[in-house]
Length: 157
Image (cartoon, rainbow, N blue to C red; front, side, top):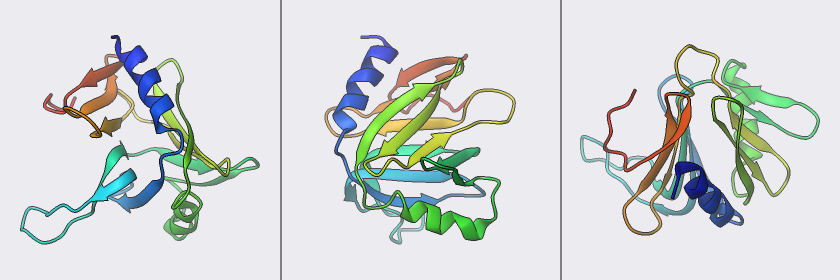
């Protein structure tokens, strides 16, 4: 199965999955945890952010939009972020798609709000989608301008 075929299969299986938890990493990095949440410990052994059955991570350059406007993006004032995150939390995935010549990802929820990766730096789009639901984890990302399917053990490029 090609990465594109695997992504298409995954995207169909995401329909109806809850967006369960959203958290910020360093800077504007954003993590969207979907499905059942699983507790994790951080490096020092204390509780960390939970991990979803499926996780979308965007290192930088993202935006949240509704039918009428961009609600906020990674370059917006940070006081706009939490209210925009609230439009995604506790909703369900309606669609998950790729767009652009260099693949970017968009998740649309059941209210029509969209979360998009939107890279504006040189190199590759900096996102990855991880499916942990059955068997070994499948990691989707972009390498050499194309959708890449790996197991998460490859070095970050």
